[in-house]
Length: 148
Image (tube, rainbow, N blue to C red; front, side, top):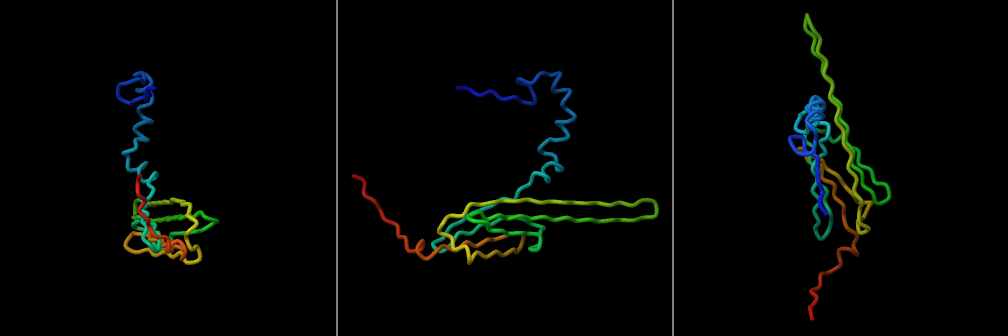
């Protein structure tokens, strides 16, 4: 089975259609800072130790008040919203700038997490959510299995 794709430069897309769509494609070019800022979702690392899981989310420039962390059932949701406004007045002009950014990430937690003891910290642009494991999950030992 083969898969064909439409490419922007050369390939299957007709030249007339490409020329017609060029202004729109340039406006929504993924390398554009405008679109990149809108589509940015923070990177997340999840690590596991014997005692806990840690979800680390990179969100520089935020404040801890910008975050909303919610647990509903086994789904942990991290939301963040930040709105900034600035206004500059001179004798001949007024410049107002607004910036709004938000994201939401959800994670299904394993049953071994002690939900009552979940903690979160935010420092130096990094949000860390600590998910401690239940005692019975900590007692599980590893075992080597012989191949016959």
